[in-house]
Image (cartoon, protein in one colour):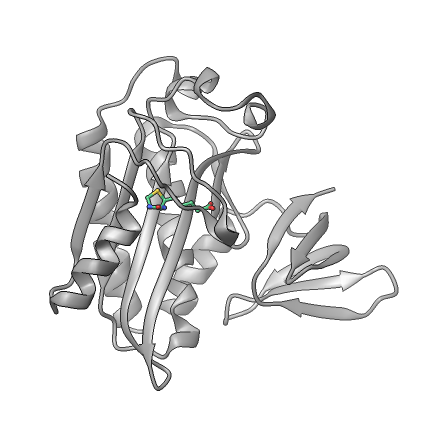
Length: 234
Ligand code: BTN
C-alpha cells in the first residue's frame, strides 16, 4: 500500500462512513509530519482511522493528544514499558521514538468534515532496518522487549482504548484527557529547542495549554506559546 493516510482520505471523500480503519503491512509512500518520509517495513503497525467528529478545525489537534496518550498508556499497561509522550504527538520509550502520529483534516467553513488519524508504531522491527542516522533516535517494541509482539491483539486493544477515550472526548472530558497526556510527559521544566515555521526557539517548557499549544519561558523571561513544531530536549 502507498500510504494508509492517502487511502483513508480517498475513502473519506467518497463515503460518509466513519471509524473506518485502514491497516497496511508495509507502506511504499509512508508520510511523516512536515513532509518527512515515514519508513514502514513489515512488522510495524501502520494504520489510519477516519473520524467525523462535530468539532471546529482548531480542536482537531486534541484528537492527536488523545491518540498519543492512548498509545503510551497501552504500551505501559500491556508490555510494562515506560512509555512517555513528547509534544506535540510522539510516543517515546527510553527517549527514543516508538510511535508517530500524523493527523490530517478536511474542513468546510471552519468545521471539520473528516479527520484522518495516521498512526505508525515500530512494533516488530529490527533497528538495523532503519538508516544508520536514525538508529539512535528510534526504537521498537521488539527491540525493547526482546521478543515479537502479537500485532493483531495489540492493535485491537489499542483501538478499543482509543474508542473509549474518543467517547470521553465527546462527553466533554477534554480537560481530564489532557491531564492524562501531561502525566505521561517528562519534558516539563526542561530546556527545550522548538522549531516552528522556520524559527527556532530555546527555553524552558512550562506547560501545554488547553488548546494544545506549548508554553515556553525564553532566556529573557518572556513567555511564548507555540501551536505546532518540533521539540528537542537540550
Ligand atoms: C510523524 O511522527 O512524523 C508521523 C508519522 C505517521 C506515520 C503513520 S504510518 C500510518 C499513516 N500513514 C502514513 O503515511 N503516515 C501515517
